[in-house]
Length: 234
Image (tube, rainbow, N blue to C red; front, top):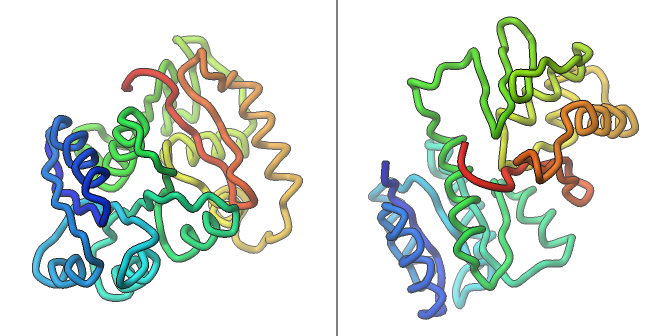
């Protein structure tokens, strides 16, 4: 199903490329060359996804994002497309409420993969149900609390299972350390850095989360982890 996407990009060639890639994938993409123009449209119409350039002639992409999070009721997913790749910039953008971050130049495969991942997470298929999570050749039965790879059962501890479900449900999205602590151990535990890393290592090992199995579990700076599909659609 095609989605309505807004792209904030002041460089004409880059804007045309983004529009072409998303249009060929069946989406409707509107390009805005000024931040204030996009903000005016956001007051009147809804978009399913926002792609924001960080450096703009008027308001920065970060300022647009802060307005969106403060003024829109809908939790519309937002991804930065930018040349800024310093660690502090990534952290600043995600801390401001962005869902993902992609470096320019725009690459067709990466843009489509990240866009589809954000849209799947924000607008899940109601027919998919919540009892089973399927990615690559992995199947999680949430009711039975079992995980299988190519029909072979995998043995996990309760905490490892909870962590696996959290990562798989957020495929393509960064899961922060705070989120992991809250979801797996409970909010009363705050200093679990080594515990998190140990459990992540065990999950990666027990599930064999390697690119050849279609999934990759990546650390993201000091923020957390992201589980990514590495080949083909689920």
